[in-house]
Length: 448
Ligand code: S3P
Image (cartoon, rainbow, N blue to C red; front, side):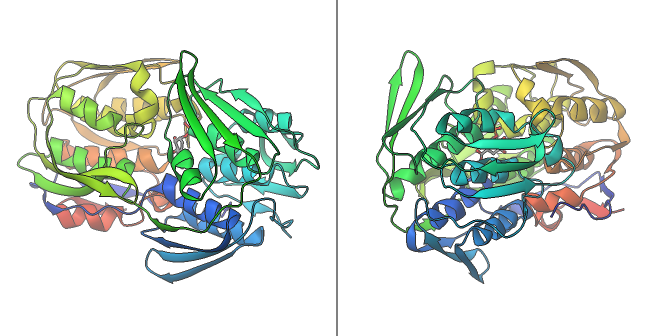
């Protein structure tokens, strides 16, 4: 879905106390990977709890275009009949990954070591994002890529005829780049090695092991050294997708800033590569209880009881925590505006190449809501105004970015005057039930 439909303005008014249970949908990262790994296995992979957000639906369509059979059986229940490692067929048409950087980068990796050619595109946001970070390491396998200036989509990728294995140290902390290289390594003979200095989300590694690949992760002075044996036969799996901690962040943060709230958010991942926001909130003084710790879908999870917290304090977020909360800085900066003192987020330059430049989008929107902000290329600082202190009364620009849209709608729930967004339509990419779920807890979010 590269064409972007009409903008959908939305408004969030001050909400009464939130109560009830916020059952958020499946994890986006794991949903993409379940479809892609399913397509690389021979036989039928069964998936439950799949996120049916537009990003994931675009990946499902892409897997069909490469020859896998992907069928929906009911809400969240899907099967994938895979074609095997190296079995991708050449797609008949352009692959449109919509808004999804994860989709396009992982799929490029997956086809990069099969001798087929595919052309990729996406929406106006995705066409601005850098693909060189993926095509550079893929070229080491023998893959060629031809895109627009600056390595932008649309881009044609010519898979390597005779791929060679690769040893690659990640220059940026990126699970997408790591995963693209590992996926390409699947169809290269011998050992492909990826080295990451700071650990990023490890869903690809967990899933590779689950599907029967041979993979070893060694912790060394250089960082994590991940070694994958090429050309395995992947065995189909049953994948139960756990709930998305990045989506859970929205009701959790809303409850923290809306007076009188007390909600339960079940099954939130405690995977150390994803839980940075929750550690940060606790350090700020958030009232979050982690109840009933257990495993779900191969991930450690807990139920979160979250209560209004009127005495949160701004903190310095440790920069090394960034990879484990990279998608949560927009909503953290909203919580920071309702804390006292300043919240300093350093080492966050990656936010500039997400679905939008998230430092700029949050800074401009929060300023319009009356919040004092400082920023530089790699830093965002929010000066808190205390519980209920944000004036609001502004329209934030979302720049085709779902997390910017949801963050400002949450801000409106606790600000003195309503907060609007110019376009809430991108919310369907990751959290299609956001509006209904939040209003079910007591929010007053409406179209227009
Ligand atoms: C993702 C990795 C992160 C994250 C994105 C999902 C993934 O991107 O921002 O939403 O599923 O691998 P980077 O790899 O660019 O950090």
